[in-house]
Structure formats: structure tokens, C-alpha cells
Amino acid sequence: MKKGIFLFLFVLAFSSVFAKQFSSVYNGADEKTLEIINTCDEQIEKKQYQSAVYTVGGCENEYIIYKYIEVCTQYFAQSIMHTLFAFKNLEKNETLYDVRTGEGSFNMQYRDEPDTILDNYEKEHGKSVVIDLARANYYFDAINRYGNQWLKPTDEVIAYAKRVYPVAIAAGVYDERVLDNLASIYLNEENFSGAESLYNMLTSLDGKNGTYWYNLTVSKMWQDKYAEAIETAKKAVEYPEENPEYHLDAYLILSDAYAYTGDFKSAEKTLNDSLKKFKNQPIVYQRLGELYVSFQDNVNFDKANTFFDKAVKTVCDETVIFNCIKLYLTYGTPQMAIDFCQRNMKKYKDKNKPGLFNFFLAQIYFMTGDVASSNKALDEAEKNFKKQKDEEWLANCEQLRSDMGNAR
Image 1 (cartoon, rainbow, N blue to C red):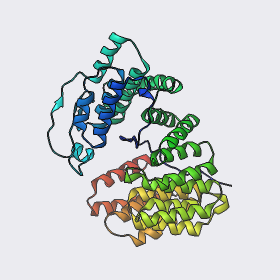
Image 2: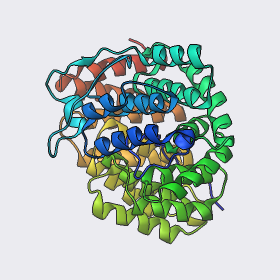
Image 3: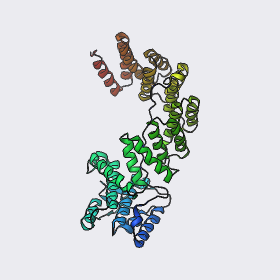
Image 4: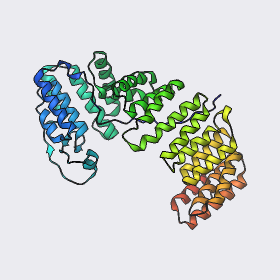
């Protein structure tokens, strides 16, 4: 029987390029329009983004407008609040990331803003599903990049997207971006069954996209479909996401899925396998320790101690120390947390580490009602931070003393 809940991250990564993109958006386009769109796609494939935007820049009809909005939002070199865009034909081995984060100047394309183009088309031709999708994609991309700093409120954008996307999907007019955007909205709103349905569609369209497999796993985990989650998490491991920072998450969620089915051996093996690829990751040792404290059928405090000690050996900072203490307090006892601090304080005496352990010890002692030991630990923490001239942690100590009602 399991005890507690493993924490896993929502990775809502928005891929800028879909491998061999599926689309039914252009099904109603005439032959000439399809030729223009195909030319644009070929230029995108060659990373000739400035050429691509010129190809569809005329915005002759709703389908070319849809493509134009895609090029603007996904392949820009620079963007000013997602209203003005600059583009670049990339050199060999050059990436959009290089262009966006490096130095250089670009000529802005002084066309009407996307909203104006969409408004003008609607005034002349009336509303259409394709134009609604183009607007929803444009707004959604903008808030993902700018958040609440953009021109329209996030809530308004999400509400609009939730109106437009389901209608378009039901009508059979959508592409991967539409499915992905709506799936991420559902996932963020904890509509896990809705997200699962869409990520099933997405993994069918692109079976090598690690983001889709990971988020499908998240959707299943929150619905207690742990056995199914094992299989989808394996796919997330097999097909790593584009961003290397997310690769470890696939291993962590696969371990979670195994643990929730009671297969603790496979859960531990998965975490150990991740250490071969991702060295010096304290979170892996924390998860290994958590395996041995959070599940009643797998409790082994000696093993947990070993893994939590390895976590702080890997990275001994306030975040790792706090996370280990939190697990002891959640699943073990305050004394175990005290012992953890005391034995590791003896091992790590450089810089502000003794101060950090004493700072947390003060809180644990206070929680247990041992005020004398709490004050003593806090005094030791302040002594260490003064020696290190660490003003930030000295201020934290003063605040803690005040919170505990012992301000001096």
C-alpha cells in the first residue's frame, strides 16, 4: 500500500517545429494556395525564414493568413510584443536560438499587426474556422512568451482558445499545434481526461515527440492509470524532449509509475539508470530515499538515510537540505530530521553549510517544543553566517527569531 504522493513536474513545452506536421486546416484550399503553402514549408525546412514570410506575406486568403501567422509566431528572429517581427534566413549550423539570444540587428517587417490582418479579413469575408484558429494560435503563443505582460489578459486568451479549438477539432479542421495548445490548457486546468484524449491523438500523429509522451503520462498518473503510465513513460525516456533540461523528468515519472504499481525494484532501477546518464543530480537521490520512506510496503529508513545523505553530498545547499528534511518530517519523525542535520553538519563544515543545517535544526526543535535547543541552534547559525558575512541568511535568522516569538 502506498503512502503519500510523489511530486512530478508538468512539462508544458511548446515545440516550435512539428516533425512532418499533420494538418487538415488547408483541406479547403485551392491548388494555387496549396502551392504557395508548400513552397513556404520547403523554405521553413531549409531554415530560410525570411524567404518563408515573404512567400505568404501577401495574406491573400484565410489559409495563407493562417500560414503567415504560423511563420510570424514560430520562426521570428526578433519580436516586439508579438506585433512586429523580424526574420532571418539562417546560415549553416545556425539556429533560431542563436539568433534570438545573440547580438545582431534585423529589419522589422512593417506589415499590419496580426490582429489587424485578421480583423480586416473578417470585415471583408466574414468569420471562418480557419481565421478563428489563426487568431487563437497567435494569442496563445503570445501569452506563452509574454505571460501577463502581453497586450491581452491571459484569462481572456485561454477562454477564447477553449471556445475555438474544440469547435474546430469537432469539425475536423485542426493541426498538431491546435491539439497541443488545447491539450496543454486542459492539463494546466487539471482536466486530465480531456488532456489524455488529445495527447493520445498527438502521440499517434508524432510518435517520436517526447513532450507528448511525457504529458500523456502525467494525464494518466493523475487518473490513477499507473500501469498504462509505465508504457507511455517508457516512450518519453526512449524519445527525449528537445530541451535537455527535461530529459531527467522522463526517468523520474517512469519511476513514479512503477512505484505506484508496487514495483519498487523497477522504480529503483529506473532511478539508478538515470544516474548513469545524469550524474550529480541530488533529486535522483532524494527520489531514491523517498522510495524507502513514502510507501508502507517498502519502508527502509536505513536505506533512506543513505540516499538522503548522498543527496547533500552531491549538492549541499538550502534547497536540497530542505527537501530531505521535508521528506523526513512528512513520512518519518522529527528526530530523524534532527539526526540527518547533525550527522551531515559534521561532514560539511565549509562556508555557510553549518549555518544552513543549524538554521533548519532551529525550526525542527521549535516545532517539537524544545525552545532551548531551538535558540541554541539559531545562535550557532547566526555565528556561522556572521563569519561568512552572509547578510541574506543573517536576515533570515532574524526573521525566524521574530516568527518564533524570540526577537531580541
